[in-house]
Image (cartoon, rainbow, N blue to C red; front, side):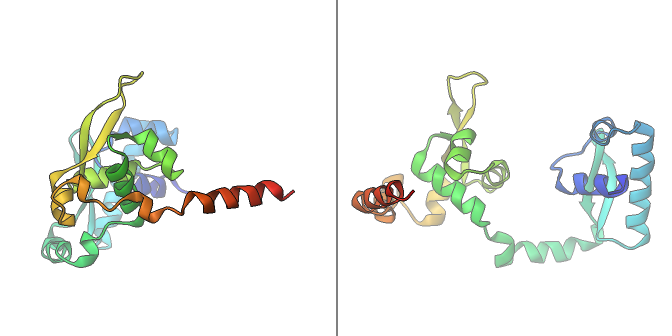
Amino acid sequence: MKSRSILEAILFVAEQPVPSEELAEVLEIPVAAVEAELEGLSADLSARGSGIVLRRAAGGWRCYSHPEAFPYLERFASTDTANRLSSAALEVLSVVAYRQPVSRSQIAEIRGVDSDSAIRTLERRGLIEEVGRLPLPGTPTIYGTTGLFLERLGLQSMEDLPPLADHVPPSTVVETLEETFRADP
């Protein structure tokens, strides 16, 4: 894959401006080469009339939507598709709701996958928030749900959440399954 394509991919997922030095370190090429590639990428986007522009901002580079796309983006933001949560975000929200306060590593352990992106999305939407820190090395952040979460679900309090036990098989079924799989060679 070419440097320009890699830079485009990195800047597409970056949530804040990325300094040229950091990009050079990631690509293992000189800063001057990164700068030249970024200038070229910016020109390519402009030449083809892309809906994305690449600009220097706050000491780094960042992709932005083209200013002329604003009215369409504004309309899109009010559609159902734009306001839907991904299944990963819904899973994380469920974990936080039932296990709060809970840390990122605890969420990842429960889900079996990294959940950082979903956590950021839920924080940005105001559905979860930092509620404290664990007294462990690195003082990991712990999360809980917000008043907006309760409001969106039409709940008065967390006690109004349906019991998790209603959605988990009875222990006899779990024990039978465990015995069955232990018996199989």
